[in-house]
Amino acid sequence: MTCLRPTESNRSDLAMKRTGMPTFPGSRILLWIVLCGSAAFPLQAQETEWREAHRQIQALNDAGRYSESLPLAIRNLQYAKDTFGLNQPNTATSLADLAEVKLFLGQYADAEPLLRQALDMTDKAVGTNNGRAAGLMNDLGYMYLSQGEYRKAEPVLRRAMEILEKWPPSKEQQKLLFSTMNNVASVEEQEGRYPESEQHYQELAKKQEAAFGQDNPEMLVSVHNLSRVYSEEAKYPEAVETEQRVIAGWERSLGPNHPRVAAALDELGRTYRSQGKFDDAEALYKRALAINETVLGVDHPDVALVLVDMALLARSKAEYEKARSLLGRAVAIDEKSLPPNSVILSSTLDSLGDVNFIQGRYDEAEAQYQRGLAIVKAALGDNHPRVATFLSNLGNIAARRGDYAKAGELVEESLAINERAFGPNHPAVGVEVSNLAYLRMQTGEYPKAEVLLLRYLEIAKKAFGDQHSEVGNALSHLAQVYCKEQKFQAADPVSEEAVANLRASLGSDHPELADALQTRAEVLRGLGRDEEADAVDAEAEQVLTLHAERNP
Image (tube, rainbow, N blue to C red; front, side):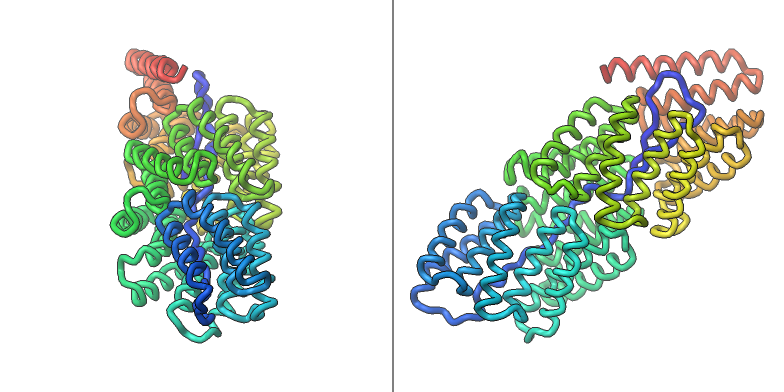
């Protein structure tokens, strides 16, 4: 969970927190594209050259060398048209080969007509109730998933799975079925159905391990996706262990500079960021970005995904101009490469809105949140956790404008959605509990705010551990409530622990440490320890000065 707070030098009583939905974001999904090829059709002499080119295209794609496979796929398609004619299975396979390369290059608008033409040719040649057609359907579903169009993806993928489950067993049938099962589980994940997705990834990984072996690169796709679901469910130890296994396996089998390795590095970086291990996360992001820019090109959607993660890390470190720059580049890539109703684009807009909010650009932030909300409601329905994200963020803006009644309605709606999706103890629920505490503070309902913050503190400790900055901020905010209630004796150890936590977890120049120090000074004055309070206030000013110098 990523939470943002204000950066103003004057401390607010309590800041509503930005809700960063577990792993969206823009979350990278490794889906499978498995083309059927033409194994079911008899080899003829004139097909030898075509088949060899087809094999080379798939080998180049497996190696992540898409710029080399693209011209070969274009030539082989023309060869197939000239040699076999239209509406022939081999020509359909060459269309699908070219579509596959386009998909890997992020050129979705070019890929869709190729896939549909291939499916139409296959239908005319051999019908659609076969493995060849199912493979094309799987590729089409992959394309929709890559663009964040989940409602289009699911029926296509389930139809492919239905065909493959009835198709005679073979090595090719098994490979295609596993691919489609993986992509269906990815749809469930993106629609917020995490228990279903976790179960299906686990089942798929076991089946693949039995069929292919423990370190088969295709089997590790499902393990990678399982790791991401663990992180979304805040099961961080499981997520780290699982993703480290994936990275080691792919580096051995695919090489250290393959896009799949970049995906795994980026995912592990997300988990580390959620745990507050910022240096570890940054090193992984830099390596992932270098791989993707080199192999895929600087304008590929996967580059944008890593840029968003780097921006979220910069935001966590209060490097807001750096975050804004990274997100501006990511939005430009998404708008260029994705459809205007893509859920992936909505996530990038949300992240940019967060940074604008922190910097006091409320009108810009509101416009980005409203645009993102419209996208996710149309794509995912009114009760998806990503809808809750935007509702909460719009509530945050309403609170900053002093409209606490409207803010309360939006935050309570967001809380209800997240509790239904995740249960009562998930970090996403904790965000909204903390936000409600802020609103109760603003309306002078301090006892209610205290109860809510104690609940959030329990959630944060369970999810992140006692040393995480989320715990430190929760303690600082609880101390603020105690001060409002004149409970200075209760606030004393709480505020002291908050300062120690944030100094250790965020460093000596973070604005959140300054907030905690100012709260600590207020507690000390309430206890009559004015000289100590003055020293703490001076330290808070030093923190803010240092932060301003390092973030001009």
